[in-house]
Each structure stands twice: as structure tokens, then as C-alpha cells.
Length: 186
Image 1 (cartoon, rainbow, N blue to C red):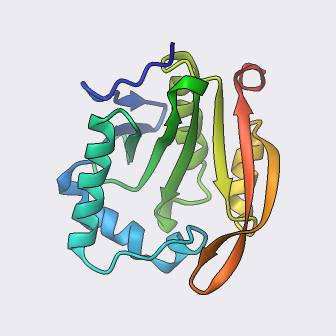
Image 2 (cartoon, helix red, strand yellow):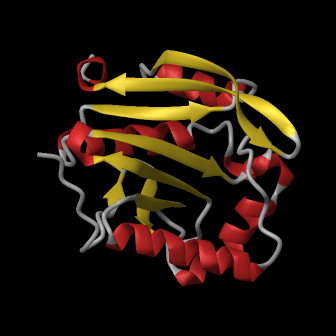
């Protein structure tokens, strides 16, 4: 059976990273991530306009965790508790053993293998502890770095939806990638 445990929060540790629960103390860092043009370029949602937006977002994350509808980790370096990114499972379909993964990382830490390490750690937790059968990623097709990350971790493109998403006055495409438990074990 699919297991979504959010209390106590499932903190995770990898070689360089500590993945912990996002807290109200992270509001400044969350605001930066949700308002920085470089981070938001391919997220296709409105950027945060104030620290209050970030605080509301953190409260929403907690509410989703309380309902066991999502799990969001703050990505931190082991030697520093400061949030440098987030990675989550959301759109959890318990009856189908499937969840969607999402992630963002501060531009200063991109290109250093940090998101690869965080993704590997969260996938391991998802398949071994949560008992997921598949993990989905919905990606803006122009986000080549994210697609490269997914493909490096054995995700396969399942579909390409043309103009299925409306944002900022434009119809946008979506690429859907997934990783099944048999491909993860390779």
C-alpha cells in the first residue's frame, strides 16, 4: 500500500545535502525562489509579489502535508540550514501509487549536481518507503536543464501536449516524463 508519512516529517540525508521540512523561517528564501525571474522562467505561474505570498505558500505546503496530499522538502547543504531549493511529491494518486515531482533550485547552486543528488534521494524514498510505482514530471519543453536531469535519472517521455496550458495570454506546451519502479531499479 502507498505510504504517505508527513508526521513526523521524513527528513532525508545524502552525501552533501540535508532535506528537511519547509518552515516559516524559510519565508525569505521561498520568496526569492518564487519571485526570481531565472527560477520562475519555466514554471509558468505568477511570481510571488511579497513576503506574505511566500508565507501563504509555506502555509499551503503544511496544509497539503497535513492532508497527506504532498510532501515538500527544503534542500539545504549539510553544513548550513539555509534553504537553497525545494523538491516535492504532489498530485499524489494513492490508488494508483503515482505522484508528481517538482523542484526548484537557487541559481547560485545550479550546475553543481545538487538537484541530481536531491532527486536521487527523494526518488529512493518514494520507491522504497512510500512504495510508489511511478513518478511523473510535467515539464515546460523549453526547460532543457530539467529534461536533461530527468533523462539522466531514467525518466522517459510519455507524452507531449500541444498548447494544453494557458498562462500569461499564451497557450503553452507540456512534456510529461515518468519513471516506473522497474526503470528506477536499473
